[in-house]
Amino acid sequence: MNRARKVTGLAARGVVLAAAFAAAAAPPYAWAQAPAEQPAAVAAPAAPAAPQGLSESVAAVVNDQIISTYDLAQRMRLLIATSGIQPTQQNIAQFQREALISLVDERLQLQELRRQERDQKMSIVATDDELNEEIADMAKNNNMTADQFVASLQGQGIGVGTLKEQIRAQVSWQRWIRGRYGSRLRVGEDQVKAAQQRMEAAASKPQYQISEVFLDANRVGGMETAMTGAAQLINQMQQGAPFPAVARQFSASATAANGGDAGWISSGEMAPEVDAALEQMRPGQLSQPIQVRDGVYIIYLREKRSGATASVVNLKQAALALPQNATADQVAAATATLNTLRGQVTGCGDLEAKAAGVTGVVAGDLGEAEIKDLSPAFRQAAETLQPGQLSEPIRTAAGLHVLAVCSKRAAGAEQVTAEQIESRLFGQQLSMIARRYMRDLRNSATIETK
Image (cartoon, rainbow, N blue to C red; front, side, top):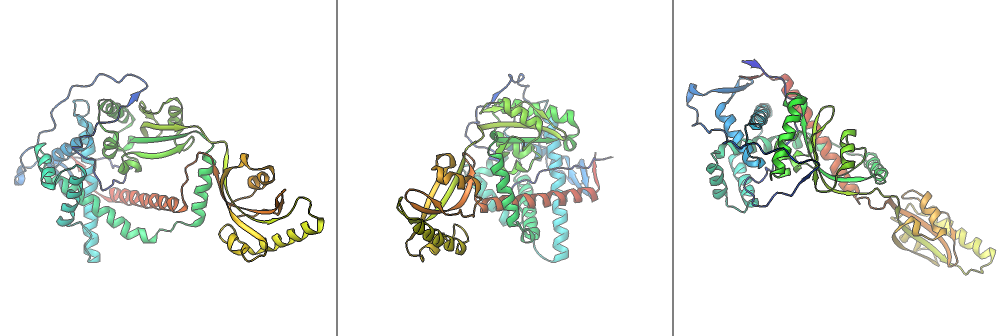
């Protein structure tokens, strides 16, 4: 046997598998150039009879635990069924490589979880009842009963045990990572504010709603292999393979668990090579393979919008009515009243409550408006103040006003709440911990392939 190259950079997989037998048609992808001629399809890998004792062939050994050729063939069949890709002579090696990488990782995960169960004397690995519940949910998502779903798998030569072992590793590992590290993670207010500022700054740049597949060159055996594999995947998606299913099974990006959905991004957030490709693409178009330093991207551009140049501000005000011909003493008295109020108010949250206790002062919510549409008297304050700040008293024909800036954003930018940003940052940190954990397991493991 030859010792295998350590496999690094695998994406953290989600619990939900792609619907293996969904009837919905794949989206119509356009491509900058006509795809290559579709390679001839081949039969899925043979499903040998269950191995008997020592007659079983060995595909790999992970810390003295065998992965058999039967295990490998079964996982390849499951991968083909869930990716929606037609196997060909050109891509069958890619299926085999992905299947083996997944099996190795799952063996490492379950070995670690069993060790933790022994050391901590607690149950971590998912039970058969939990696996049956997961399969029932998958069947429901495919408009089937659990029995019909299992029968469909078996009709394609896939044993239900193969699916159960994949789910067992995914569910158990995700639960362990969240249980062990989730309570320790803290996303600070400064992190949320910094993320909000980055989003506001990026809103002025062109924005793209994309889905992605990333093939890690180190993981798949080199850049040439990654480029070839990307071209094959593009060809299959042009023939109808669903992008989300392909991303779930082949992408090394953290977005794999979401079917490759990266949401809205701005120019400059990804590698320069990807930015250059996006500038030339139209919505509904699938990119050619995009080579970057560590691998190859496939991008599906779902939507595109120009960068926003206008700013939108959300305002509240406290005002004292004052005639246009008011005397200097009247203006001075009103100014003193509003300045006293300003000293008591901390921001938008308590402006109206504090103003209610001051005779003659009326407070209210002015809502959102583009700064350029505000009256000249209010525009300068809205441009210079930051969220949470209050203006000096502003004189208008109607009276004297104090403005409070509640929020400010670029027009057209996504309105993302602080809670949503916090949840996103939490997920990113947890995903990073999981990847590092897996990297350490691989580095300390003995992995051999035949």
